[in-house]
Amino acid sequence: MLFHYAGFNASTLFSNDGDITYIVDSFTEVPFPGITDFQIGWSYFLVWKGQQLYISKKPEDSDNDTGSSVQSIRIPEKSLDSTCCKQAAIGKDNVVILSNDNEMWQYKIYEDTWKKVINFIGSGDDSEKEYAVKIIQRGCTVALTNLGRAFNVPTLIDIPKRVRFIDVAGGFDHTIFLAENGDIYSMGLGTRGQLGHNDLEDCDNPKIIDALAGIKVTQISAAGWHTAVVTDQGDLYTWGWNVNGELGLTSQESKVIALPTLIDFTDDRNESVEVSVKKVQCGNTFTICMTDDGTLWGCGCNKYGQLGQSPEKLPSSPKFVKLDVPLNSDSIRDFKCSEWGTVLVTD
Image 1 (cartoon, rainbow, N blue to C red):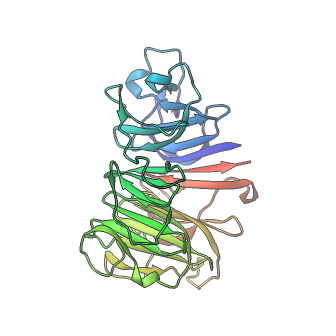
Image 2 (cartoon, rainbow, N blue to C red):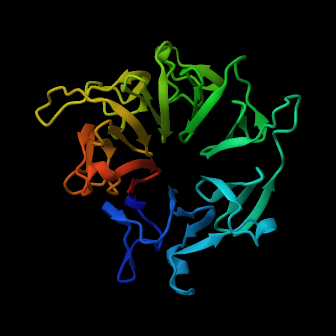
């Protein structure tokens, strides 16, 4: 399994003759052997080797170490156990880590300090033990539990009765949830239409997106001020802020799209083409999706090469275009976008 990155880099992980390569404008193999996962932060990366977690070093750290471009992160009380990390949520200046025994810790990167998060779930009356299964960190830290409940850590989020959430994603100021039945809920700030409720109002608790009612959504993504979802029919819907073309909606003149809108894919001659989308990922100002034949399409800002293309050749795109990827599409098993970059996972 190999990882290939494109986009903004402010670490020593990608360099040329000792000089930091700030713009990685084509998919480049991550120069670290044996990694099993790779997470993209605002100005750093997290590198996983099994359950061992590493963070990329800053340029100012490059003069005083062994030459490695990453350093190990170990929870203080478990410093002798290098494989105690189960999951991590990236923030601008901190990482929230979930341990194998379901404890949550916050690591402040630039202060090099740790803080244990109090147990906010509690035992309750359920016979089944409840624990966090996914955490995300954007404007706030949101935890999703195995029982389908959600916390704005440490506060329980008020969700409709008999609704069970199975996934969560978030942008700068908003959070979206995928319910077990395929419905989509959103909450947070709505000033850029990112909630999908056909208005610009804020929402304190998860509210169903009526425009998608009756449509079974299978996968969700959000970043910046926009949102994208894939349905069980292979359709792609986007909404929110579209200043950089991140929604891929060339037919819309408005820069704020407050209602989920179906994407119409077109070829180089601007003729409609039939595609079936199986996954979508949002970065802060761009969006990439993969179709069932392994083709990658992207739109939005490419200032840092985050679409995997040269910024000189493609500074941005207001519509989804096929991405020229120097890898066999059959070998691409997964991909993800975050902040200002994209990583491809290949066999």
